[in-house]
Amino acid sequence: MAEIGFIGLGNMGRPMASRLIAAGHAVRGFDVAPPAREAAGAVGIPLAADLGAAVDGAEAVFTMLPAGEDVRAVYCDAGGLLEAADPDTLLVDSSTIDLETARSVHKEASAGGFAMLDAPVSGGVGGAEAGTLTFMVGGGEEAVARGEPLMAAMGRNIVHAGGPGNGQAAKMCNNMVLGVSMIAVSEAFALAERVGLDAQTLFDIVSTASGQCWSLTSYCPVPGPVPSSPANRDYRAGFTAAMMLKDLRLARGAAQANGANAPLGSHAASLYEQYCADGEGGSDFSGIIRMLRSGG
Image (cartoon, rainbow, N blue to C red; front, side, top):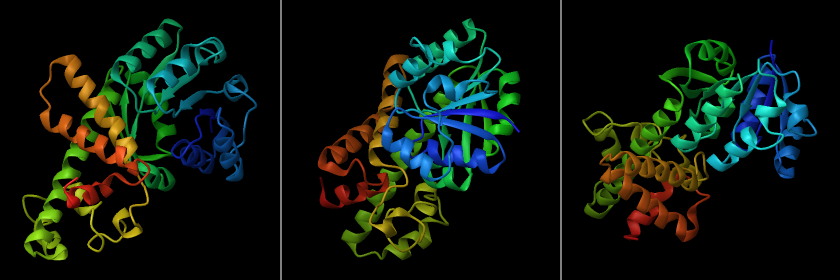
């Protein structure tokens, strides 16, 4: 079993660290936010006093951080991981960040002699708690081989997407599809309501026809057809609208920077910007159907 440092113990990092512990690994966690540290301690995650103590002697370090600037600071600032960790330590960033930062930090880690992976995840808090996440991994094959047994404690699917940054590229593209498809499914149910078509009937038809997709069959935005979906819990978040907006903005930025044509992804970002501006950033992203119903 491995000695693992885990930096970032928020809604995703905390259950991921817990899964590593359940698999028998020795984990030391750290988070700069006192509420996150308290919540982690309450579920039995051993806490380090600071980042250096969390990574001292670790064979691998996972990070799960809010944004690209946080990743750059934790890895590259004075006293950060590239100074505090032993060069033999495998570095795995599971944050969802912009492609430019991911590749830049990879480059600096490589210059310091580190093996590094960008390994963002799909599956939300529920997947983290259940250990069923999908890891989209960018980096060298040897580093992937080292990291795969550790990621297997937290996820069901581990996909090597290619070289440095390609994990982030895959996550960005996947979540653009997700955001666009959730809006399309929500619009269909909103239209069905207006024309007098029962929601369950629509679900029964579309789920076995050409409109079938994950946003419909696993995460249906109306109550009833999929009992496990957030629609049955007043859209209490499994994956917040604010997080979806973050991912759509990353995709939009990457499309603009690389000359890609992504009008639906860009429009989806604009709709989620409006939804979050209405104070719904903390609700589940499937709750956007409420805005679409009202014509907002």
